[in-house]
Amino acid sequence: MALVLLNLALIAAAYQVGRRVQKAHHDRSIYYVQASLAFAHYRSYGYIADYLERKCYDAALPEAKERRDGQVVLLADNLRRTGNDPTLLEYIRFRDPELLGSVLAGHLPELPSPEHPLTLICPEPPNGR
Image (cartoon, rainbow, N blue to C red):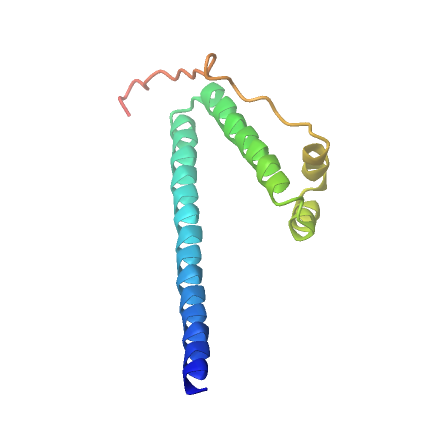
């Protein structure tokens, strides 16, 4: 009897340890993804800011639109992968119902293909900045 109780206690302890290890790993994964996204956004905004600082408005606008459109495509894909989670749908609906309607209807922007990438030209300013 004592051996059975000991086994049950060990099973319960192993379960708890496994659950905690899995949660810690999952939490780190979320932070890793968030950090990667933050870095990518930092770089994207930096490119756009650089164009604007150099008064290259004709280069900044398409860059900003392409990045915005890329985020819409990612949103649609990830929303679908959640099974159109009702909480996420409500979150988006509250903030941008028009975007949500377009995404759910499948009206997504076309992104430049790798064969025909967006090429932006901005001459260096005279002062070399």
